[in-house]
Length: 498
Image 1 (cartoon, rainbow, N blue to C red):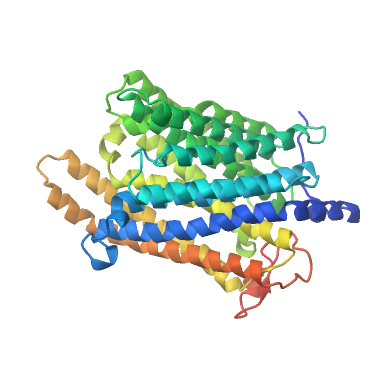
Image 2: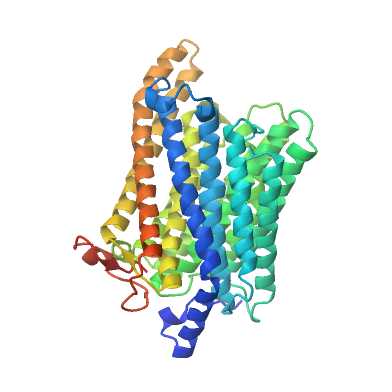
């Protein structure tokens, strides 16, 4: 099979006509992409506030700053709001915006009717807002990541159908030729997300399944949301940007297809590892465990493909901020998947299940993998849409390091504390009060990590707002690599992080 080449005129030194074509495409999608990015950044700020609040409530539940007397801000509502704002607000909005940009770039044709994705963005945010407010007043289903009531879920589904139909139309009307692997991932992501979201809401809200079937459906959806929506979006970005940053085509298109079809085959089966020991048929749990372990095949294919594409040349990590975010995110994806396979094994799950380890694993995937890649995508795309350069490079560098250090502290605190918690729960001689005392220092470490991540997200929002509001035209169109570290030696100014 002929291997497609991913290279734009600005990278491969294309003709002036090609560069003009790219500019026309960017102008046509500027408003819808920036609307999705802007709403995603805003929801990330909201998620950060509720995350700091929920984390503080775990560590010091009676402290005045945790608002113990405010029922609508209690942990049972603050944490679901954080998680939904992070997943459906930040990650999904940024993912859809990135998907619009990528698909338009691949087709090399301007968006004929931008009102369609603009309307979808407005509808999505209305649905998300009604869902968040419903959780705060106590109108929730209680199923993780499906807390929104049916009316909010319907609004979200309507917007999702609009975006999915648009994506299918764009891919269907593409120029003749082989689809690049990022297009495969994006097509799969939009179709899978619409299907799983509709199925789960119908089976849990509109026509509720009986008894213990409900948690099985809920965790099937939670696993599919990560593996069949967020993961394909992030991998589509990585498969597009890493070859561009490396200045060469992807190492093996066959490996790329193996990773895609492996994800498509096993990704929808992994969710029920959370129900090990539950009142469900053993074969269902076993099938989920096997799928979780077999997921290592596409994961290692992705890792090998990216590593060989880079040819062990990681020098650009120091100089290129989007590259740094995307590559670190891709590395975390490998670690996250390996850890997920390990903790899904029954003998290991006996210790880690119902502990902080599970929370640490979830945050590693959402923040260390998906968010890192999406941060890189936003840093790469926005200057091209606005023809401006990012301001205050030290702020951008601080965002990266606060994110990395905060994520490290968060994962360390939750994982080590969770292991201690798990072994303590295995020993009937150890009282719960002693276990709580043992994990307190690790909850403190987690709190510090959450605070650093919240500060990083705030810095990201400030940087995004500045580039939108301050019209400082770039001296030249952003190219493959700019020296951000050299530029950051000054206290302020402009920098391209392309």
